Length: 334
Image 1 (tube, one colour):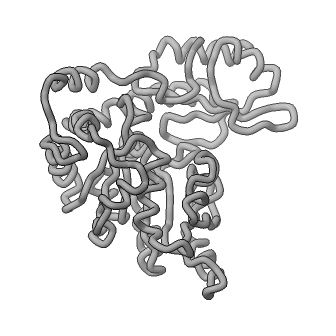
Image 2 (spheres, rainbow, N blue to C red):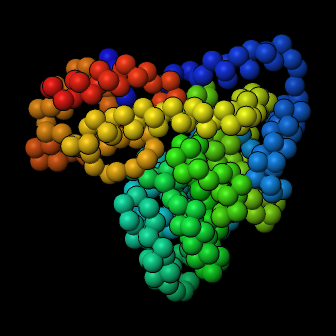
């Protein structure tokens, strides 16, 4: 089977695994107090050119929970996002189970429509309603789109006008950066908190949470421990992310996944929906073709229609060109 179902289906890149092996017999202090964690924080500060604080967490959902929990201090505070967002569709009610309401605002594709935020915010007028406190977006979006830097600047301007904290889910931020050509420095200038995803790009596990706003740094370690995010072997994640970010290795990995996705998009353009520039490819096929190709290709059914379906093909840092070419042939000939 050709696996195009997701971008986290292997243990990790050889470069990252070799880095772990290099330190396999070294002894480190636990709970993020080690030299590698401090080295990582210094590296991210140099890349963002800001005095940020950094924390390695195990996965995307817990990173969203912990990051938003630091923002939403009171049970009556809520987060604004779009309906397709990861915290709404793919996190099993994790935000709601933490006691916070998700408010939907207008979308353009998978992106937040900046023209709808203030109107959404103004619907919540008094103490009989929740109080919007955070604006959440994914970059890349769940549909694989990438915000332009100007779009992010405008969303941040609106967030500050409304006294909202802007949180960027960066599960596929490296892919967004490789596609857009802006940088971590740029991202740090247009939000209060963001994270860099490693799980979906060649790390055995890990998301790197970056706190930009000084207000959100206060007592963060308490929420990290309280919400089950503090890793005793934090140095393992730090070792991985130090290599991941050094010499733009993460952009090299992301660029390959995008190159493979571009090949799919070009050859399958007659089936293409949700145009984007990252490593997720959405195509619409009739049900017979979907059934036929499922014998040879692993993929995710994104949306069931009457006599057809939209499926998602995802390329990874190590997707082979020959597999992509074989998949194209199978889809065209089925």
